[in-house]
Image (tube, rainbow, N blue to C red):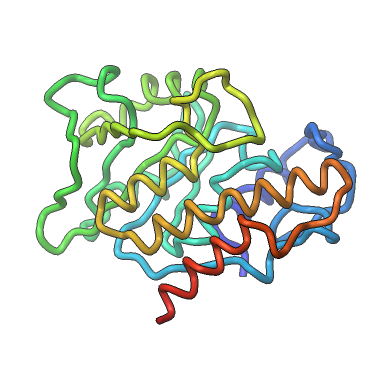
Length: 242
């Protein structure tokens, strides 16, 4: 069944005036379930973890179309993942309804230095009976800063400022900064912070597998199914099942 990012991608393609051509041979046939070429499909090993937390992806215009997008991985793993396109002049009513849904406590995930100090929180402590909902800007860093500044409907929400000690492991795009993390890495940090360690660890293990499949397909090399990336994902999934 298509998840939120897949549906958003389909909607974005439907309104495109011309085909989207990405780097890395986007003209090649791709699996609808994982966006990889069929020879490197990873749908059979897609993990899913039950979580109390949810993730809301607010995505820059063409982000759902990029085959390197990692918000897709978040939606694979976390069932309660929501995805919305961002526009400066309008807001999807479904997004506003989600933010006002009483079951959720939304947190805007963004560096604290860009927000008023009184909005910044360093931990996840939702009120009783509320589930944490992590709002992530799925975009380049320049786009994300613009989206954060120009989304007044988020101004009333707390800003969760992460303080990671690690550096990014994302290899498919290069921002030039080791402290700029891809969307799935940020989601994993949020889930771990909320005590959702099974989901956080799964996302951490899932990203290297996706990167391996993508780069192997790009370089026309076979997948190493017994490599370290796949072994780590199998270990994480097996630990949850035991």
